[in-house]
Length: 312
Image 1 (cartoon, helix red, strand yellow):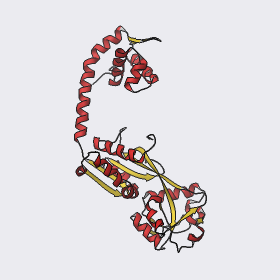
Image 2 (image 1 turned 90 degrees about the vertical axis):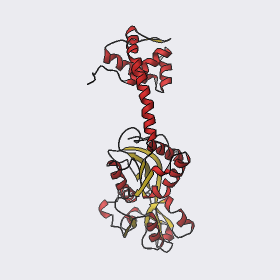
Image 3 (image 1 turned 180 degrees about the vertical axis):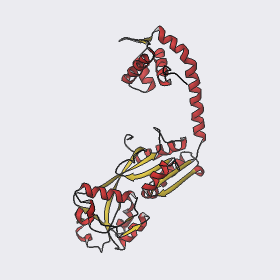
Image 4 (image 1 turned 90 degrees about the horizontal axis):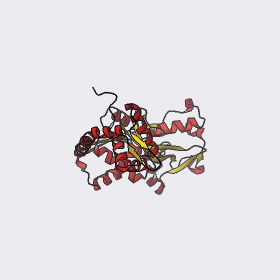
């Protein structure tokens, strides 16, 4: 069993950088961290060992005799760690298997573009498998580690999983041109709440977003009526709304063709917006497990031009 006094590799790497550069500022720049982070890491290392390791001054910083003795012990360890780092990186890169799961809107309207770019970047599509299902099932698949990476819709990251924001998505109300709402193209949140809708099945991201937006607007959850019809795909929902079965609330990206062909009309809801995040989820770690999963996530992020990562 290793003792509590054993320094961690990052601290030893930092001490080595200070020895080489004679500067906390240059060491921080070399390692890609702030000078404050360097000072804090050094201070913790010195407290852990009970030794002064670095002489600091306004002009330069140098190792103390104790720091030099520690570096003599650390060099072979750091060399071995770097060799292992290279081997682990190669090992992960050799595992090209990639299991994905995506909610239906993402699977239909985003995932094909991401996969195409991923393959064009040189990755082998033969090792990629994807599943399209509802958000609840994607969360289960990731939680049970049946897939490495999932893509979900919703207003908040799923609890217990790592999450990275990719894009915003807007939902809207759509009706047939023959529906009574098509003339005014505007309704209240209470009118929507008491109207049976054609909708996706329970567990889909769309239904959760609608319920949350209406209740936040002040509509009592008990007033939300049951759907007129539950369907398993976005296309089925859109076709039913176009056939005037009932109004639908669905992602705007799915309805573009129906609006262009005038098969559907968009209806505004007074002072209510239905917005959700599209994001990636995985089980644990700061990055998804496996080289292929990490590369795929970076591909999706670059396409969506997402802002700085929002990790939870």
